[in-house]
Structure formats: C-alpha cells, structure tokens
Length: 225
Image 1 (cartoon, rainbow, N blue to C red):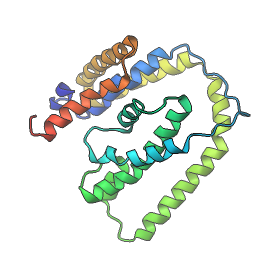
Image 2: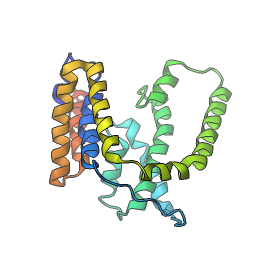
Image 3: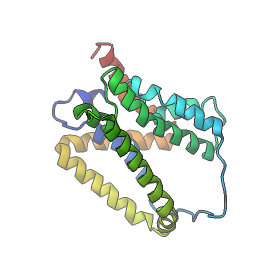
Image 4: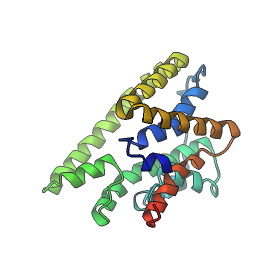
C-alpha cells in the first residue's frame, strides 16, 4: 500500500491494489466450483436488530479514512452472532446506509467517499425537488428490476461453467490494469494477488488486507507520509 500510493508511475493505484487483494484470489479459488441451485420455496426472515445496527454503523464509513463497509462488518461480527443470513442482512443494510451517509459527509466535511457523492459535489443541483425525484425514480426502477429478474438470474448463474467464466475475468482484469497503468500496475496487481492468496490459504481474515489502505491513509492523515 505504501509503495502503491507513493509511486508516481501508477495513475490509478486503488484499481490494481484492490483487484489483487480481493478479486483475483476469489476468482482463483472458485475455479471449477459449482453454484448450487437455490431453493425458491424457502423463506428467510433476517434479524431486524442486525439490519438496524448495520444502518446505524454505516455512518462511520464516510467519516473515517479507509474504513469501508467490509471492515466495519468484520469488526462488528467479532461481537455479534455470526450466520450467513445475518451477515448478508447486516452488510446489505450497512452498504445501503453508506450511500446516504456519503452524501451527508460530502456536505458536512467536504469529503466525498463515493462516485455519487463526487458527482453531487461537482455539479450542485439548485432544486432539491429534482434530486428527490431522481432518487425516487432510481429506487423504484431498481426494486422493480430486482423483483423481475432475480429468479431468472439465479437459475442462469447456477448453470454457468465457472471455470471458463473465472479465467475470462482474470484475463480481463489483467488487461484492464495494463491499459490503465502499464507494467507498473501489473506489478502491483501481481504482488497484491500474492498477498491475497496467502491470506486465503493461511485462513486469516480477509479484512487484514485492508491494512494496505488503512496504514498509509492514517499516516497521511496524521502528516507522517
């Protein structure tokens, strides 16, 4: 992380760094895996307390440097009862609330932590009615599309041959990194991929890889960089 952020040769440092730490190991370890077909008759009721906790804890992500929703979720489940459904409910509420808190932080402290917040800060809209209308329309469209296509999408994904799918995306990510940053970005991608694979192979928590963001960010924040 320190080398990546201080190198003048890499135009987009986060792309090869995060791709190598998280995306490449996930694709490599899922080569040849098969996704089980979901049981469409099964109903799941998430714990509402986890949803409320996730919506509240999302406020810490925009206001603290390099503290993303994944790190908050990993830290929270050190104290909460862990289950697959609970983690999905908590993480979903966390990610959804972060969108709102991103807009708030861009107005309060002038720091945009997401693309939407950057767009709103760069092009201020004079009429709040336009923003509210666009938000409501986007939300309605997203909900309608999710309800319409989630079952066909789940059936289609269960029939995919992931081996070829994953190799294609690995090649695509390497090519995209080369286009954006050249050989330097490929070097960072390879080094970060080794760290990410070692983290998975050793059984360590994936959140430990976030040290590549947190340590340099805190050092810069406290004027040590």
